[in-house]
Length: 225
Length: 84
Image (cartoon, rainbow over all chains, first blue to last red; front, side, top):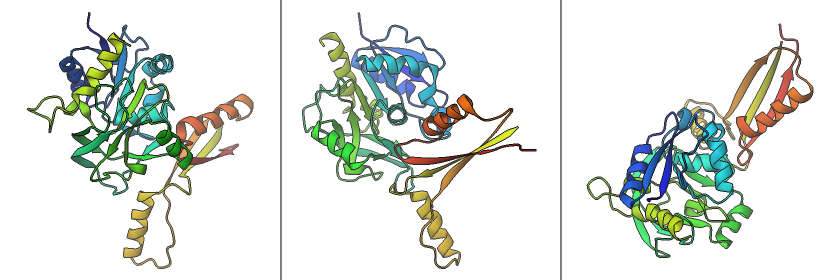
């Protein structure tokens, strides 16, 4: 039986279909989850996709954090369920305090959309075990509020504990501290990522297929933990 | 009737690119002597009844956890009583 990966749709989510497709291409079964339900439909992992949940009102991710589905997700993730937040999903994870820090307006004030080179620096998380440490990948990045911010002590701890999952190479597109593009929690089951691996799973539409290992990693980690 | 006003500002050490853009515009439009501009949010909440005890505590909690993000923002909450 294939692994069930839930993809949450909030009002204003954009990339839920692409995330579900990426799960399918990786060999998993994508399960649609609705923001207003607290039932996770027996999924083994969850993806919070990109977009503009609740219109980005108040702060990006601030209202989604209190959606009924998030109560169950936060509970399950705290018990070890793999959880990936992409872009707006990363913002929701920070607002939920499942990950430290915050994502703020790009320092340029411009919405950035580009194919971004990254270096994978953590290959022990549930979502990155399929990469080789130091592997460079190119996947799309598109955000207006992607500047990763945390106090120096938190940043030092993230670095010391190897919790920086991915770092921007060549260009820092949004003013993120220490070029951080993605981080994980202490346990390695929760990952937040500003760029979009789900848009890089097919050569027809993506700049590469470098995004696939994020999705195959979690399937493998659930089959043979 | 009562009114609660919550002001939310980015913490002083957090870069405020929007404030900086506004600062540039003020200068271009001829305002001299501008040393800094910070942009924030104000929430005006009108409520029935009196604001005290548990309801005030809940308002403080919501201002800290929903209306502001303690990682990057500070808030100030004021209760304005007896609004006509």
